[in-house]
Amino acid sequence: MTGTIQKWGNSLALRIPIAVAKQIQVREGDSVTLRVSPTGLTVKPAAKRLRLDDLLAKVTPENLHPATNWGADVGREVLSS
Image 1 (cartoon, one colour):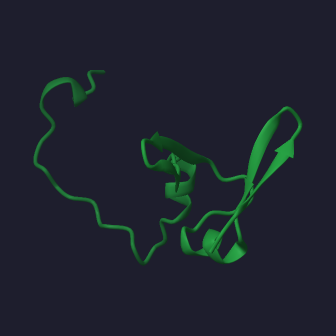
Image 2: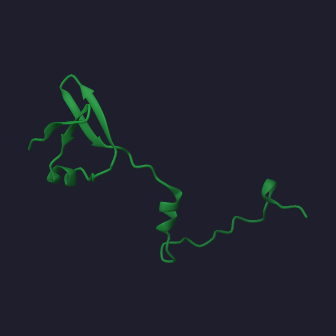
Image 3: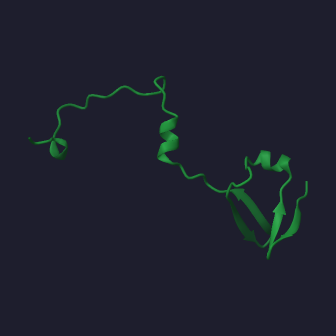
């Protein structure tokens, strides 16, 4: 399969066929990493940055672990009145 290099403003853009985009699991707006080697250019999806809000949104009563009793409080977690 091939892609097409086209002018985009003062830059060049690589058009990726939708079948390839689906295979590498990228969508419009996703970041990619570009690596140049003696043999050519490699384009890979950039590592996704995890956000705490996104992770917490996946917590449900079914996958929430129960609290664990680790014993009496010691050290700085003990609150003084």
